[in-house]
Image 1: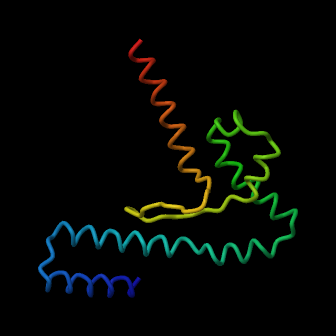
Image 2: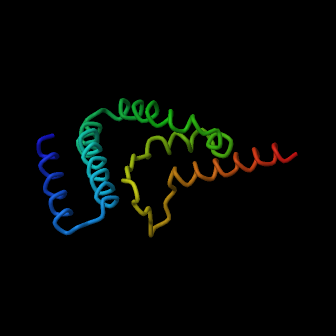
Amino acid sequence: MNFQRQNLNIITHYMERKKVNYNLQMKIREYLRFIWKEEFTQNADMEEQIINKLSKTLKEELFLEANGKILNKYPMFFANFSESFLRQLMYKMKEVRHTPEDLIFSVKPTIYLITLILEQFRKERMMTMKFFSS
């Protein structure tokens, strides 16, 4: 934490010296705090190394438990995909974290859970709007 405080002081002095407006200064400090908090709580590389040491059976159980909870929150998965496909998907899912204001872009065809969630949200919102307009 001392490292973070020191870095915040450095960037604060820089921004004050350059007369950066207060709102941008706050935005930058909040962004850095967010990044450091995420770095502290997430160590994805270490997690992956440890998980790879598990037996295939234990690894599969772990992924089914952890990733199955995510898929269970969204009925659209079970309505549109077979159980065998969902099992394969649960095993291959990887957590990707983005910081605020990150632009999420992929050149190769990839399915992002966020896309599916947004689509589900849009459909539910449309149904709600139809319900209230009826």
